[in-house]
Length: 253
Image (cartoon, rainbow, N blue to C red):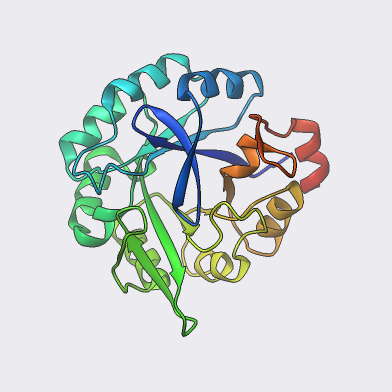
C-alpha cells in the first residue's frame, strides 16, 4: 500500500530548535537530539533540519550537530543552511545526512547545483524554494531565510533546478509558515505538474486533512510540516507528535 512521505521540518537556530510564523519571531521549542529520539519512537518516515540563520550569518549548518543527529536518527534526514560549496556538501553527507537542502545558493549560484548533482548524485541534492506572494498576486522566491527577494519566479526556478540535476524540490510558502491553515495548493499543483522530480509541499499544514488535500489536489509527492508536528492544542503547547501508520493508511486510502 503506497503512502506519501510525511516529513517533520525542524528549524535550527544555534543549537536549539525553534518555530517561526511567516519566517519571523522564532520561538524556542526544545533540543534537536531529544526531538530525534521522540521521532524515532513515533516511527517517522524522514526528517528535515534547516538552520534558519546560517546563510544570513555567512556560515554553514554545524557538521558536529549533523553527526550527533546521525548518531541518534533511525530515519533518513536532510539538512540545509548556508551550504555554498562542494566540500561542505561532502562533509554533511559523510556526517550522516542523506540529502542536503540548498536554498540561497540554488538561486545565486545555480552552477553549484549542477556540479553537486554530478558529484554526489541527484538523489542527494534538494533545492528548497521559499515563496512569497506580492501585493500584485505574483509569486517570487526569497533567500536568506526570507530576508531578500530575488524576484525569481518559483515555477521557472523549479524547472531550472530540475534541469540542473536536483533530485527533489521543497516548495515552502513564507505567507503560510506557522499559520496551520493549510498548504498553498494552487502553487504546489502548478509546480508538481511541470516537473518530473518529487515535490515536497511545506508551509501551512495544521491537521491531517491538510496533508490529504495537498496530496490529492496539490499533487505533492511528499508532505512536510513544522508546527503541526511540534505543537498541540489551541494554545500551541509544545508536544512532538506524528500520525501512526494506521492513521495514515486510513487518511490516504
